[in-house]
Image (cartoon, rainbow, N blue to C red; front, side, top):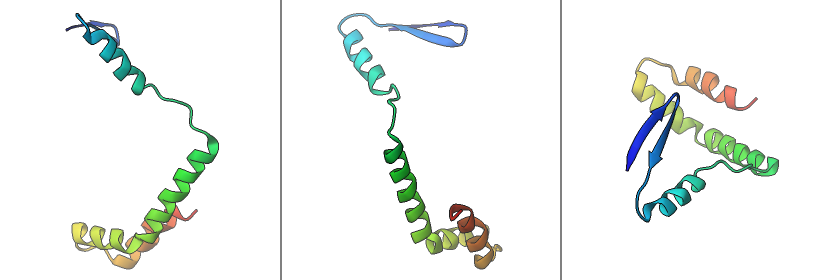
Length: 83
């Protein structure tokens, strides 16, 4: 396989039977439209995950930063998610 660069894009030349496999891999990474309900569900689940584990996040931040008050972290970090 060789790669040529043309401007801001790179093109690969694939020899043999690998071209079909490469095409399948490329198609697997092509973004597909996501339904609004699916996106909303994912956001809701992420929000629940963050809020349900807020204490663990605050404990981790306190361990990382040492001098950061837990109540301050809880207020500033988790309040941004609850808007």
